[in-house]
Image (cartoon, rainbow, N blue to C red; front, side):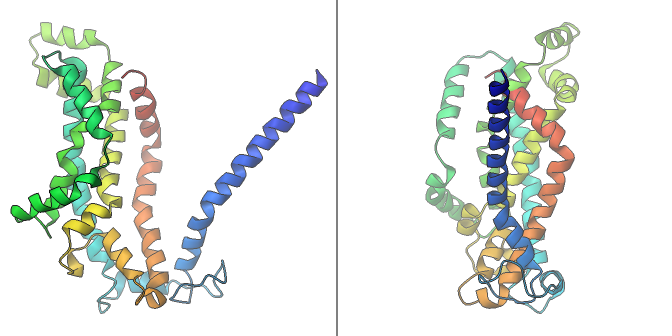
Length: 286
């Protein structure tokens, strides 16, 4: 019995040491990015992990140096925020409405529609990016932020599975009682289902916001005019580490990476409880 306890203790300690090593391995690039953002050396330095001297100059230059034609971070941040907010509002509405309709309504072709949605979701979106680009160009929506909002929002309803699983856990008797009182489906959805669905709403909002905030591929293809004031944060930061600029802007690139992560980190910490509840509840039923 004593040997079993010792073996369990060794296994417990070994497991946690392994997880600690993985966590440190995962955190090393992030720590290096943060440290480099405070480096007095503007270029890349792979000979030292921690900088020789520390400074806030990279953040000042990134945020307040209007004479720098390369790093237009405030403009990029504003463009990305506008795109992310409108995409979040439209995508969240689509996902919640499609999920409710598939979860609570029974109509001809429902299962076929669900299967088609799942199959289409198996294919990465960038497979269609060339076709999407030419469609947007024919409508004059390239080099246009609204074109990006349209691309990000158009297929958002296909991501209905998790929200549908959450709606499946809400008792059907609530909806039936409301129907007996004369409520329409829109009223049931707005006044009964939505107030009971805060976790999945928070999860959907965060997921919808993250997609345009972090995207590079579609943004790079659609916003291809070369005008820096039209770019999103991802495109702008990528261009700052061009081989011509990397020796003068790498530390500012790291500072930009830190600043971009702050809004998402704060949002996730505040909404973490609802986010986790939305994922776990939505995975109960398919």
